[in-house]
Image (cartoon, rainbow, N blue to C red):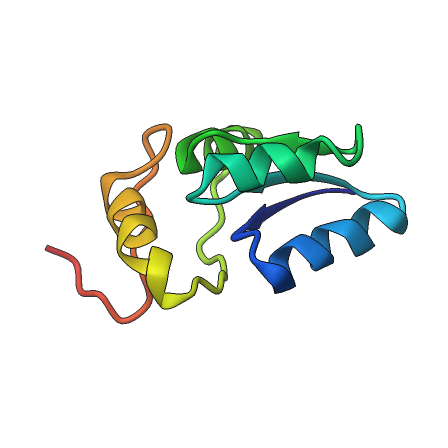
Length: 103
């Protein structure tokens, strides 16, 4: 299975390592591209995404139709950037954060 991971702090990086150890492929993204590149260098099963859009757009294009809901957990340090990217949309899809009204 191919999965995506946003946030490569202690928990996220270890989750990626466990997923890879269990035979999965992971596309990984962190606000700090150095962290992303360092983790990707650990295994050929880890692909580094340099932007949040690069991580999400391929997934949205492969889903027909796009899902109604998705779930993610982002710590406070990256929440603003992730929410702004969601509001801007990816590949023509606008993702509305839970609890945010349509405008």
